[in-house]
Image (tube, rainbow, N blue to C red):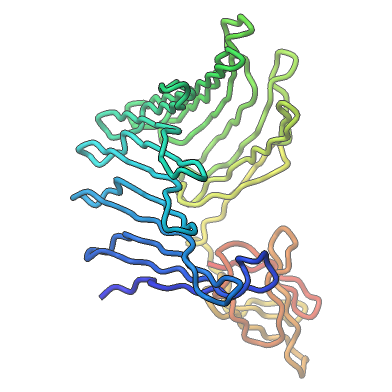
Length: 355
């Protein structure tokens, strides 16, 4: 028997009137575990439970969500707030999403937005079109096209936006390049405005990466286009008065892990294979401090000679952040992520490796 959440209770105080007291959420599931109803109730000023909203979910025979209804409780009963409807192809890919919403008084659902999707034979998304309901007809607002190479790597994303009020079409494109090991070695972004009469793309920014034989990032840098050339940038840029942050990404562990670097234009990384490390359990030391084993899996043992009381131990990341502080001769470091650290024992620093 599976455990499923069927009731959740909140107790809050000091908020707006309808938030005083308790909230409750009730969840209902079908026989195979699909969520079919979420009911929200709350206590009113009279300290009585009152309906708030409910969402109903419907599925097809392949367990794909095909309809989502949200109803609000008003003085005289339930009234529609919005509805989503979904259509899928034979491969269970979503090919259409319809969004409808009602006004606050008549509770009659009306079209708002429709999204259609297309896929290639590998079930990769190739086209997304978003329509807006205006003047009793669907008008195209967004269009996204995706192109892939023979390895199913995304090599181009082309977006288009139509503004019917100002009568222009704005396009933007992201291009990706990969090496023979399918590592992304370059990602560039360009823009084009049809209203300006331009017939070429304008460069905005790009990332460039190199990798070692184990598919780990060894170098990456961010540049932006200024005065007809690429210049170093600290991975932030301004556009239309808004500052955007574009971190450099370090990929490692065969691309299964990553780390984001903000506010810099270049990163350079070197690696140490933990499997090849061998450190004696009791290494010689001129200051009478012994830490073992190293690398560490769970317990770090500390032997500091001529110290009658348990030493004070502080462990720092390589960025200088204090991640653990305690006293003792046996330190549990199992909660620390794998990596390199500095152990400070009664003021003596030692490099340690958590594996």
